[in-house]
Length: 175
Ligand code: SF4
Figure 1: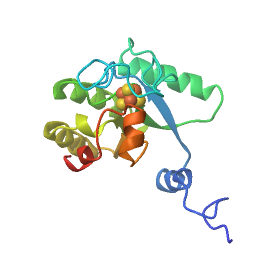
Figure 2: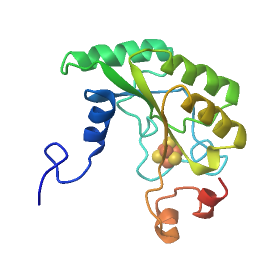
Figure 3: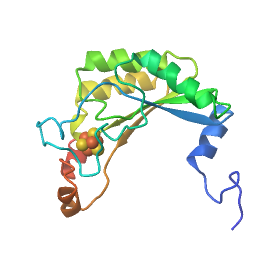
């Protein structure tokens, strides 16, 4: 098969980002200091069976630091290995919309204020996206691209129950 998108026979995300931003874009894994309704008892305890103690964000920066400090720390670590200059602020650990909207506005705005952050990426769950949070993300998307990562894991209800995902498929439609 002919390779027309860089070294791959398909349009990879890496290729797309290089094409859009002129160079490779690196993820900075951040911790917004939130929990998860599937861990704190709101919808479940113990979380998904694959979730780690760090809320599936074991490589994220220390949640006790401010977002600005986390970004600085992660950039420094990355630059020891890579010639990185553009970044995705990736809120990875736990459920990153499980907090009052004013708090979310504060931390997400702080992240995209960094001129080297070109994308905001938010990992969350479909049952944690109320209207006011979606409005906030839409507003921030006017400033810099916003990605929402929903950890679907499976479309099969039986498997979802087995892994203790803590929401059913219609939760996606209720959004
Ligand atoms: S939804 Fe995410 S943070 Fe919550 S228990 Fe599952 S993997 Fe962990």
